[in-house]
Length: 397
Image (cartoon, rainbow, N blue to C red; front, top):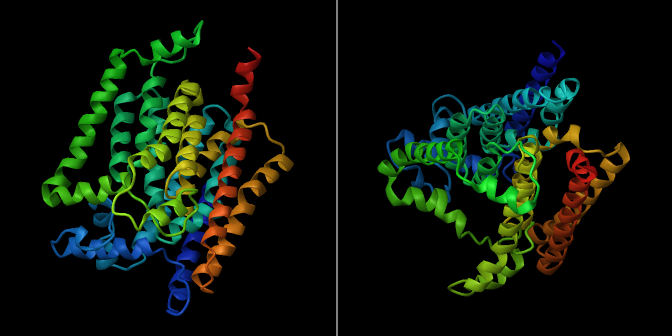
């Protein structure tokens, strides 16, 4: 009963934030609370409602499904999308509670509250960012997979990749985790057995591919190659020359004057992330390690990506409540870890403010803070892995 009431309270807080955004955004002279992407979603929905392509809206880089879900923004009220994203927030908390209750029933409510009352999740959804839908799909995929419903998890994974391409990084560990709860005498034997395509693994892969085709082909039929270019291919070659948290942003800014980016540069920026993603997938490929593995994969992808904005943080933060019962950190250690992660962001935001609003040339200082933030991310992830309970138990064994 307490969980229901606190969930309702969390939704009420989100409604208040949405109402606040309506009032605050009336001032056209200042920085708006609502994310610019929300305006893009709404414009794309307007085009769809009029029978046109959502890609008539410049910079719309998403599946048409998002624009379709936000058509009520046009028909009912422009707050519809924010309410929808907030509702997905609640659904995420319910899934977190269900997942944690299997291993730590006494902590299931607490872990759900870590998401419901997380300032980041509240702000992201009420600003009109659609990542709560992506997080919901990723977590429901995890729930189905842990329950050994591999066909269902493959379908949800395909939908996740269709909505936002980043969950593609989870495919390998999902494949490896099928039938993985065995003890192996050597590392090489473990790798060979987990790579071996059993009947269940083949069924999972085939279901994933067919499901991805089913959910993607209709949009390609209606909107053609432009759909693939804007929703998927754009993200694979994206080089954001504007300042962002990524350590690569300054290089991208300097390279923007050239017509083509060096192949060597592309490999150098993507290879470290690829190596870490693959090695982490093998390291934590056991079913019981899946939540922590997905957290690590998400964290690595965000930290090593060529573009990083604050909305990307929700991709790994959504897994933190699932990992909380397994990470042996005291309250003081947790606070220290949070400070290591937050302080470089404050420095970065300070210099970014000087650039955007005061007109000072702080590009190099922003880049230095990006380097500091990258080092902080590496430190936070390494400490988290060291204090992961299951990992420590394995070392003892």
